[in-house]
Every structure is written in C-alpha cells, then in structure tokens.
Image (cartoon, rainbow, N blue to C red; front, side, top):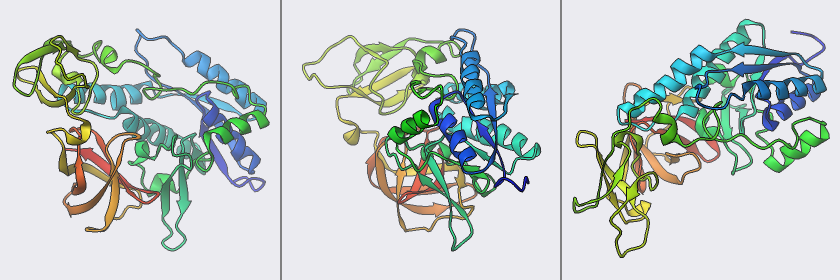
Length: 360
C-alpha cells in the first residue's frame, strides 16, 4: 500500500455521473484511485454506445488526473448475464439480469481482477452503503440514503469477502446532491442524463429484445371463464401480475386493467383478470427461496419480523422466515403478494439488506 494514500481503489467507471462522482470523492478522501471501464457484450441489433461511454469516462479521468483502464468482460457478461436470462425465460421463469450482472461482472470478474492486480478496494456508483458493524466486525450492506435511487435490491448476492473491500461512495447522498457534487468537481458529465434499463445495455422493450433470441409464438389470452379475449406473443415472455404486452380484442364493460393471473406453457395461453394486483387469484403468502445468499455470512433469525421485496422499487411486505434448508429458505408474508418463479426476493431488517435468493 502506498503510504501517502489510504489505499489503492479500482473504481468501475461507466462514463455516467454516479461512478464519476464516486471516483472524485475517493480521490478527495486520499485514496490512490484507478478508473476501470468495463466493456461487455452488446447485441449487434442495438446501437453501439460503449465507445461514447468510454470517451466520457476518459474525460472524467483526465479531469481528475487518474488513470483509466479498459477491461473486456464480453465473455463473462454474455455467458453469465445474457445467456442466463435467455435460459430462464425459455424455462418459463422471470430472471433479474441486473442481479446477475452485479454477481458475475462487477463483483465477479471485475472484483477478482482488481484484487489480482493489487487493489486494496473496489468501488462502484451504486446507491447502497457498506458499513462496518463494530460489535461483530462484519460489514453490513445498508440501503442508499436516497429511497428513490436505492439499489441494494440488486446487490443481495454480495458476501463479506466483497463487502469488506467495497466502497459505495455516493450511497450516503441524495441524487440531487450527487449532481451538485459533479458540478463542484467540474466533471464533464455533470449534466449527463442517467442511464436506464438493462445493465450495460440500456433502456429497451424487454419483449422486443427477447424476441431476437426466443422464437415468438402467438397464443390466446383467456379470461377467468376460459374464454379467448385476446392474443399474446408467447407465454414465456410474461410474468404473473404483469399488465402490459398482450392485446385484448374482446373488450368488456369493466374498463379497468387486466393482470396476468396464470400461464400455461404447454397450451401457450395466459389468463388475465380485472382485479388489482393485491387481490389477484395468483397471490400467495408463502414464498420458497433457492440459491440463498446472506451478506453477513450468517443465517437470519427464524420467527423474527423482517420485510421482503420481490421487485425493484416494489412494495415491501412484512414477513417471517419459517424454515431453512440446504441453500434454501421459506418465508411467510403478512399479506398475499404476487410473484413469479425466477424473481429475486430480497430480505431486509430495517435499512439493512440481509441477502436474498431466487423464488423457486
């Protein structure tokens, strides 16, 4: 470690405001900062934006007077994120590619290479917080201060080996304050719009995107009585509780949204109902969770009151853990919720993200 600094930090820099301010804050705090631009797989039918994003990252690095490396993780992203997503949808499940992007790329390939090259820490522009619990010595993951931007839901796979060496420099700031800091640091991306959508790929219509990799197969939309009232693009493309992406051709007098309450992959049909999400017939209080991962590396308490989230920025439900098994656990919610297999379920104790798993 360089005695003149607090340690060597490799910062994942995307060319956006959040990661740029993260690098600036770490340099100001006295760390030896190296920026890393991650180049990943992008399908050839989408606009190629990585060169422009890297150019922005280079401009920021030059402004801050730090080096910028470019690391190619195309293979890791394609196999660990994109191919995973396509397999899951083909199997009738609803995956979360952003969770896998963090696990396989940012806190997988990037983290490992940074450590191998001598980094003491890594940092990203996520809205989350890694905080030392002085009583136990464990590093906790807390929600970001900005509730509207909190990204702890996507980070539930992180364990102690990663959290103890990871900084989330902007996690303690509101987005408006991050923008203000970007201007204060004279960063060339201070006015740049936020990126949205799929991790590294951007904003897109998921069904249109998937149609390039999974064959569309038109099927029938049924009402609760089993009558055909519309068409859809293929049962694999849809999630329980979803209200978009299918066509209703037989209108009813009740002018309220339809929600998907059932899917039949063999018959290639989806069934919809006019109820609100909270009252859907497919709602349940019991969740079985696989691929369990807990941030502190210890199991939470059974019967204690927690909250759980099954969608990013979705409602948080009060719950209790009913039982643990080998890499699995089961939850009982205080009230019914709509969820689908393959989705990430994330457990919280107040502001602390305890970990999570995949709904089985």
